[in-house]
Amino acid sequence: SSKQLAQGLSRTITEPFSAYTDTIRRIKSEVDSMTRSADIKGAIVIGFVSDEFDENTSVAAMNFAELLAVAGNNTLLIDLNWIQSYLTATLTPKTEVGVIDLVQAPKKHNLEETAWIDVRSGMNLLPNRALVPGVTVDPSVFDSDVQRQWLQSLRSTYDYIVIDFAALSESIDAAALADQVFGLIFFARWGVTNKKKLVSSIENSGLPRSKIIGGVICTPSNKGISRYEDLT
Image (cartoon, rainbow, N blue to C red; front, side, top):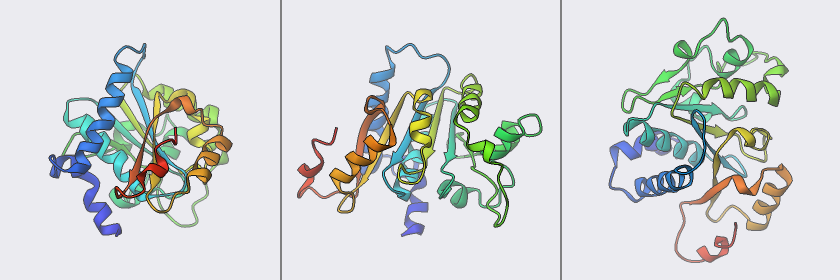
């Protein structure tokens, strides 16, 4: 349920010995092994994405960011899901500013006043936008070059930037910003995601497969898991 998902936003902190936390730690270990010898200037940028919207992807991005932060890393989590904005709606539903404001008016709004601080981990969350019905958005904010320049400006401030992207079926952002991301964690839904459709979704999006660090199957069972084993 939505309530259970919201309660699970900090499982890496509240349930450090759980199987879920171990999965997030495995993702962190894989990222560590891949970035250790890489020549990276500024923050390491990791994206979370799925083929269709699933709150579990956002929840995992939050837990991953918290895991990084409690280890002493200066970490920023960005809700870049323009369609669903799950993290914004769940954690900062009354925010009046967000990504849109920083992109459109960087001189008027600064990151310090816009970001929400997670007191449990010290992680910063950048909400997507004010969730007010009827508010118009300047289309220029969706320009990939504008978003790319804005993201580059943040990389000198943080050790890690974690991005919760909109699903591939809803937005091209993950593919459009792939050159700014070190790697992506891809989420599939057990019993729901069709493997052929998933592969087709990735290929049609223009997302380079080389950017996919790994995949996670949400709420899997052992029976029939081989259906997904040759996905990448």
